[in-house]
Length: 251
Ligand SMILES: [Zn+2]
Image 1 (cartoon, rainbow, N blue to C red):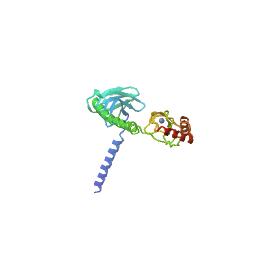
Image 2 (image 1 turned 45 degrees about the vertical axis):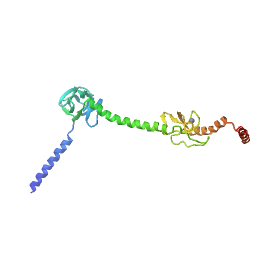
Image 3 (image 1 turned 180 degrees about the horizontal axis):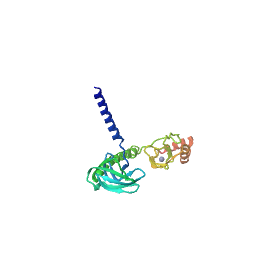
Image 4 (image 1 turned 30 degrees about the horizontal axis):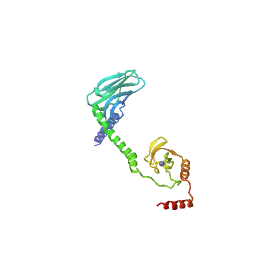
């Protein structure tokens, strides 16, 4: 009984040892696969021009690069690198690895990479499958941000007494170059650096408006009254009544 337990224990220990050595197996050189031009799905499908690059110990002298156990080339100086085109190989799974040799002749192995080489058409198809939804989302966003507000606000003109203090919000305010009235810039206004292409809610015209400081905006509010007064000279109540009577004579 005791000896049986001991043998089970021995077997278990042996298993553990085997597993740990498998995990501890170190690769003497590091192989990296990088895309130079082409397509990579991120899940192992690749197409186009790729590079295999190896880094290793200082005394690494030579590196052989392999695809499916066939040497495709070697590099004898750092950076140990080789380029290949997936189109030169049949479509399907391929295994890539490298073997390096140090100055004393020791062979060092890299880990293996497996990738699925796809056709150029498939690569493009997959790329458009990604691009098309992104482009449509962008288009919808532009539509919502620019076109919809333009239609909704078309012809709509806000009434606000001249000289009245307004709230400009965190986006700030601008001064309409056409009617000189200050207004809070809109969410839909198109950003052009420090300026925006926005619609004045008082005269309804679109123009490039610069976001101004609050002091400037307050001054513009006050100036509204001055503008209005300059355009329509003040008429006394008496004059106004007299004019009304005179006008009524001709009716
Ligand atoms: Zn205006």
